[in-house]
Length: 450
Image (cartoon, rainbow, N blue to C red; front, side, top):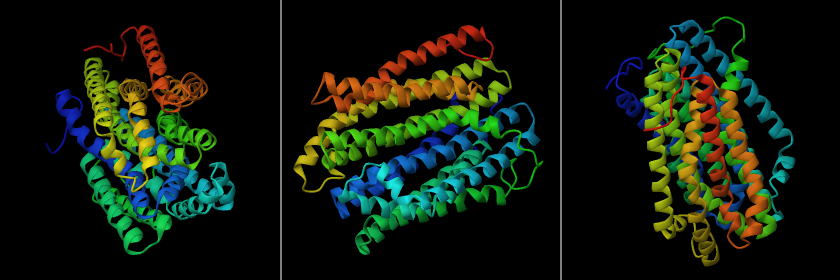
């Protein structure tokens, strides 16, 4: 299918048109971290793997900011396109790119000036400090192009070219894999080589998505619109739920690392690094399902087609829950194989990670519904509800779990914090959704049922 008509084509056709590119893109995104971790774990060692885990919060922060702007701006653009306001959609695009450059440039400058202080914030031990600093120092050189590339990929997808976004991400990921091998195993550059490989692969992503605008494949153009910035606040507020969803990875990893360093030392940090790297793969698939639904829901919300919004949400929830259940089964049945991707001749670490992974993955069936409801609120211009849901899910209930679960189960509780948080969040999600439905009285909303 060369193109899709979001106003009239069947919802399943529209959903699957966006699903493969969206999920592929999110899978590729997770591979940037996953491949680095596997290569570093096998080529450099367990300490280096722990050092990479300590950098995840800052890597996640930049990605969260980029996707906040990209998803928020592209959702608003799709809504305006659904209403026939193409000039405003172009303005939203330009202001999103400008906002990305300003914020990422500021954060990169701060990172370089206070790099040592940033590394100390991770809680890195003396043994891990140098490797953590080396990785972050190189990655900072590429973070601006990294952020802009992800923002452009969001707009390319919503501008009717999801396959180009997918292809660009795939080629970028393959570049990362090849360069990781060369820089770690051929040239023994350690964590510096892993960072350089990831950074250079971002240039490939940027070069791929920019061709959409150079070749004029969609409605959007690389041109200066009106000079006002009236959409900046709305872009950020609409994308704020995505920021909290993404930054959950960084914040929870940072908190977990602090707790784990005190609970079991660098060994526990390394085990958590293995678990979170595989878990991020599943999380990003779930987010890809949400991204596949978002342009369809946003467009039909703008076009006031309530039944099509409902059908899209129901299909998205069923797909996401299926993914969550499959992930839990895989982690339970193939734990040794998954952990073995990272661990070489380290039985104590292998046993600890093998214990932690299936416990942690119990979170995913509930997480699937939580993420879809948050994505729905975002797509129908209810960012405050999506933000509230994302905050309690990513921060409040995780902190509560860190207090409660290790006390209730001293041996296993630390690995059950996220399942605990997602189960409580599910109740909160359904209450928020029901309240929104009642208040909306059926206007531009849906009933979450099959």
